[in-house]
Picture (spheres, rainbow, N blue to C red):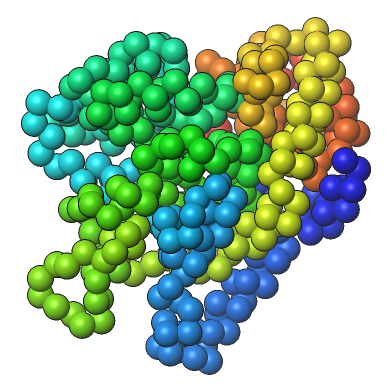
Length: 384
């Protein structure tokens, strides 16, 4: 897989530091800068005409590119600002749930998603321990099952198929959050038969912020009616009609004016992911995370990520005496990573990282802990 290292020169930040935070904000492709300049040029030279020359259609055309990566058919994936907005659009299809008002998810679900459902007084939220417990908790009153494909705190891949099967038996809908899997773990939303899938571009897709996405199973897209809707979701938006008539398919799940510059930037990352292929990226990722775990084991560290390859995403979590302080010292030594409270330091190599970088990182980590140099940062905190 050394041929994937030929892509390193497409990511400028790799020449300045050891970048192991691709699970949070992946390295920017150099092409993204050019795409943003193209956006600025279009605005400068074409002005309002740019809407008819590609801008207006970008939530669908860029969505189709995501669709090719996640196994979705054309026209079933649309772009939004972030996952919270995408899930709110889904939730708006069920404004008056009645008796069937239970939402079931696990304790490790991402907080932003949890907040969204907790804030709805007409929903009964049930939180369970893990993916297996979700299957047991789904009943005839369950409406939605919003689950993470890969957990953000420990990078564990969830067993999705039994959850989808049980949810459909009970008449419930599954919303699969693929933020921590898209671009590094192969999956196919059509084969999984999920009702909805959401994700963003900040992480393994190398697409940057502001470009979330929503997949809607095609048969559902024809019959569900979101109430969080805007003029892009109208059948004839430029007729400016006073009454709502839904667009066909997933277009009705759009809202207002799209985030055009973010979509320009995001395609630079998607292009690379498509060019390489997620299967090849996964193979490289497993090699790197396996090596990283071996190095950490040899250095005597505790690892909190799954050791079984089939259950491990792209990130390795390691416990230290003071995660915040050790993280700060790693940053001062040019190693960019992050930590999550109660989980450990997160190290997320992507296909462009090298084995030497991992050896260097673990060597520095061991030195920081053994020397106690992290103590100077005691009490520190990180915003990201």
